[in-house]
Amino acid sequence: MRILIIEDEQPLAEAVSQLLMKQKYITDICLDGNSGLDSALTNVYDLILLDIMLPNLDGFEILSTLRKNSIMTPVLILSAKEDISSKVKGLDLGADDYITKPFSSEELLARIRSLYRRQFKSHNDNCIVFSDLRLNISNYELSCGKNSVKLGLKEFIVAEVLFHNTNQIISKDLLIEKVWGLDSDAEYNNIEVYISFLRKKLYHISSKTEIKTIRGVGYRLEAGDD
Ligand code: CA
Figure 1 (cartoon, protein in one colour):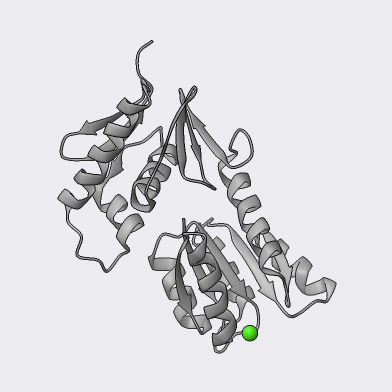
Figure 2 (spheres, helix red, strand yellow):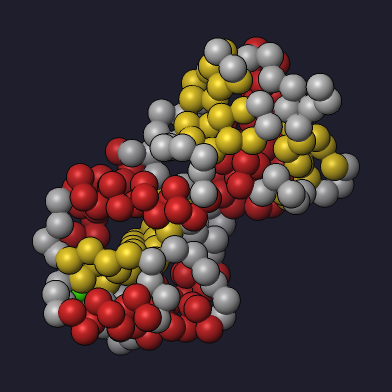
């Protein structure tokens, strides 16, 4: 999961980033409003942590611009403004949740997990389900019935993107962006390697689900025949 942190207090931004990286989330930090909006408009994130009081463009303006541009990425507002009216304003503008500074690491992580579950309507705590497979987002375990296997971080990210888009074809470019980031020089064969690792793991756990190659386009997760 890729998270954008828009927060002008650099020590706080870095502490949050460290905390999230320990949970194996991938993070980007923007320290002012303009660069935050720019990143949110041009990259694909799974979640945005958004401060309100920011240099040159505040969090409310960023949020309303994103929603006007139909960018519906979940937004968790991090703010020192604890008055009710700014919470209401944030939620009315389309924020998904609101946390008041100072907050504990545990609370922040719990809210992130909760937003994630809400976004993808996973069938039970911390698992995304497709066909005969369950992908556990907290321990990166992929299971089929009683069989299970641990995924590495990059395998997990690829699997996560496939699970969340089972009705469409996923391009190799999108997978590269999700796994290595926009500016990476990763190539198609890097993705092909991880797809082949995942296929081996599906075989290993005796799943009937397949990662189909759509020639020249990308991949799609498909339930196998019974
Ligand atoms: Ca601030």
